[in-house]
Image (cartoon, rainbow, N blue to C red):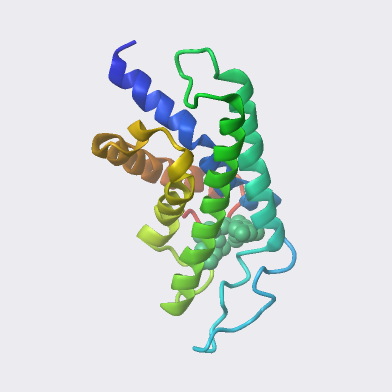
Length: 179
Ligand code: CTP
Ligand code: MG
């Protein structure tokens, strides 16, 4: 396998906890909104009904679990990411927490911009979570992830995966809108 393909593949394994964290709430989220229906000073909802406590918790838990599983599978293979197994778990948690935090921040800005729940927003929906995941995971992450060419790959790939998976989730009836 050429080197760059192995590197891109390793980067996808690295970000996998964030992808799972981002996707889990669509299936597992429901119930009380995380903002308790509170409104911001602009009299619009803080985050809106699309951000639930269960969604947040299930996102962090699912992503962390994926990190832990990677920590069992990857050490010793050519796709090893971290120098110690517990770091897969720790960084899995940080990536997932960052993802769910970024997801909330995205909805916060969408509400401030007057967008209704579920309204599509290119940057806020597709890439905001990734920025926060990378920021939260920064200090535990391997440096190669932050090389410009790898970041470009990660953002481009994430955009394509996000669009494709939302389309599939919509066709499966998991999401009302295909974004
Ligand atoms: N979800 C949840 N809790 C979260 C995040 C998501 O329950 N913290 C669930 C909700 O059912 C939500 C669905 O996952 O409708 C899709 O998530 P997302 O696209 O992020 O939310 P939207 O409904 O589009 O709301 P927003 O406009 O605020 O992005
Ligand atoms: Mg949405």
